[in-house]
Length: 64
Image 1: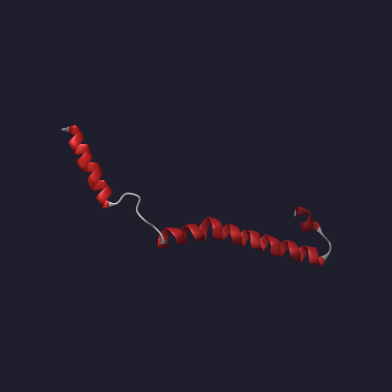
Image 2: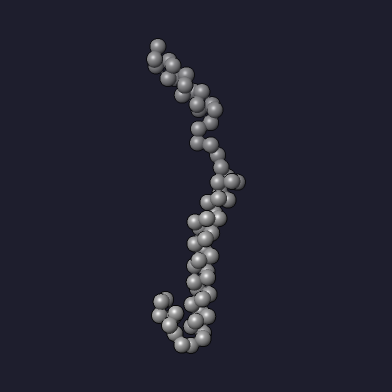
């Protein structure tokens, strides 16, 4: 792909710019936008209050 940067033909330069634009757009979405959206809309706590209460009661029972 790097060869297309130095090409003299205009069609190759346009193809290279479009290809790099698509790659950078995908990179931006994959690394920045998609993880933020997933964490905002489909976030679930790893430890719920019920799990925490069960863990603490088991811990207290084990100490006795």
